[in-house]
Length: 347
Ligand SMILES: *Cc1c(COP(=O)(O)O)cnc(C)c1O
Image (cartoon, rainbow, N blue to C red; front, top):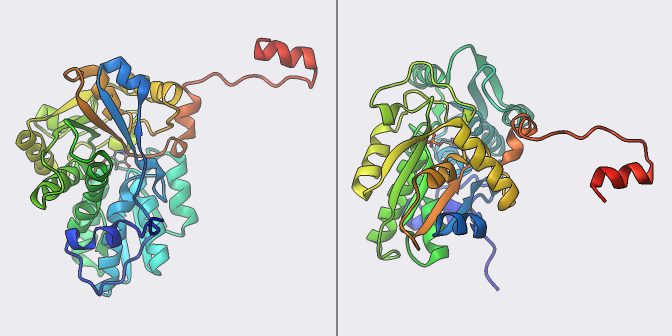
């Protein structure tokens, strides 16, 4: 029998260079499914696998980096952590800080985070500050809080976040036996694409992978600074998790794309929603809108026939029920009569 999963830091401690005696704050994140997608594979003529990051403890990949960032903060004697967030970072920070017994403060752009994420930050007991500004402005405030107050910043400008997130690349290679040909991933603040590339490089360096994938990142067309080559002052997209106009890891994303022979491209909100619905209907995977940007990119761009592809689905669809309900028709209530019910079902 396989020993039980211990969370990403304990599983990959040596590769992450984490000291043996650092106590780890974990909710047993990671070990997420790499799910073969038969209908998507058929549609694009390739072998496509979905990395289901919504299966992490707080419902997004942010947990992979948060376990390490909060453990290190605690190890350094921090009493409080702070982050700016489009939602998932705050949900994760709130949960891990709570577990560690640390105070957590989160700055979120008022009116632009999904309901589920706001609920998570609040139920886990974070001090939630809604600011009338976008993510980029909130992050600028958090940087200053980190400089002027005794708080640890747990945004992905914290290198521990990126290091922890690299474990998803390790898991993909462990599952497939080697790196895929193409790795498709949504890009917001660009920490994740940076982390995956570091992870693949590390696994190649230590001989656990024989090759490297082309890294292809996707921004939303209304929030695509890397594609445009300049910051977007007023980023807009329905995919709120990637509604970011000036990514902190811009250079990391550029390096991942150019060193790997990949690219950073844009997909429209319509393309994102089409992929979101396709994944739910055809592959039975309910992900966030932002997550569907990877699959929207695959459907738009295509890959050479027979390629092995991984698309990262970064967060869980239940985070944003409002968006989901906007894509479907809600049936009206009926009296409990057999004929009426049978008719409604189409029998
Ligand atoms: C944070 C997040 C992203 C963007 O990741 P970056 O590292 O900021 O590029 C995409 N999707 C979801 C669901 C997220 O929570």
